Image 1 (cartoon, rainbow, N blue to C red):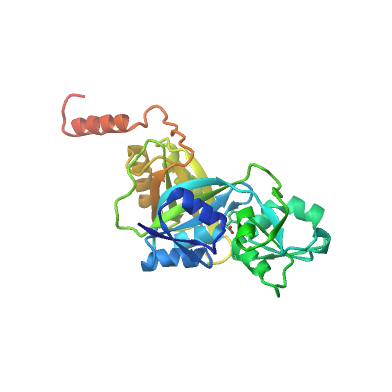
Image 2 (image 1 turned 60 degrees about the vertical axis):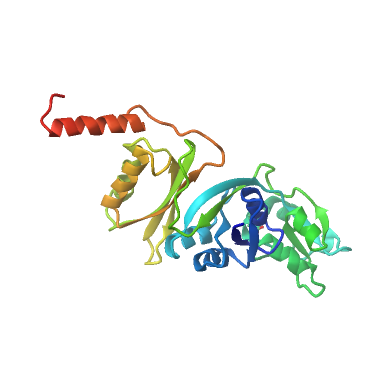
Amino acid sequence: MPKLAYLGPEGTFTEEALRLLDPTAERLPCANVSAALNAARAGEADGAVVPLENSIEGAITTTLDEFAWGEPLLITAELLLPVQFSLLARPGTEIPHIKRVYTHPAAITQCRGYIARELPDAVVVSAPSTAAAAQEVSLPGSPYDAAIAARIAGEHYGLTELAGGIGDRSDTVTRFVKVARPGGPLPEPTGSDRTTLVVFLADDHPGALLEMLTEFSVRGVNLTRIESRPTGDGIGRYFFHFDFEGHIGDARVGEAIAGLHRICGEVRFLGSYPRADGRQPQIKRGTSDAEFAEAGEWLARVRAGRVQ
Ligand SMILES: O=C(O)C(=O)Cc1ccccc1
């Protein structure tokens, strides 16, 4: 039974994602995303589950930066989880008396409308996770009056649900990924896969981004996410995160990654894994594995001086 580290404590959305990804895994709750990834790196767990992006606010930047700068890890699976937020408080609390709210930053951004409407005078403070907020609010001497978290976290920590479904949109989705230490076999291609890369430029020059995008474009590789993140070396210095359709074993994907390796400073491969939405890749004419193979054979014949 694998042991998986995750953003804890019990009752986070990440725990729900982990249970869906691997129902039989032993669970190791950690205080934050970095601690969960470090537990996987150090071998205290076989892997980790962490949030990567949500459909309202976009990337969870701690996760992106950990993947880029920390000891390498490989993504082996992803999960899309619809999330619903509740306002939770110690029994007896009434909404008009709530002055301090505690929750994860991703929940703050997804409940902005409710907070502005119903809690206009409340101070909202960032917590390491929604369940950490619920746990804190459950303590009798807590400086916070309410938490925003999953309903199940309220049940777990003995809080009352004062309002449910308080997200600005009812269709919010968070994408979670499962990671492992590199060294094992990659997930097999399924025909509906996604690949994730981090790319550092060799040098800043006009057209550098276009050159990277061209490596994908000419091979017919469809991007599904692109982010620029600061390198930390001053204003204007960035590295890039890419998600795209396909598996590194696909000819067009492998060739695009090799092309980036040739022209960029550093390419960090973060994994090829089945897509959670099961969508098939768009394969343009001339970019299937069979067409790449046929072109390679044709080139070999030409090079050997044989009849074309
Ligand atoms: O804090 C949690 O429960 C998490 O798992 C992170 C998070 C927070 C808000 C929305 C989705 C994931």
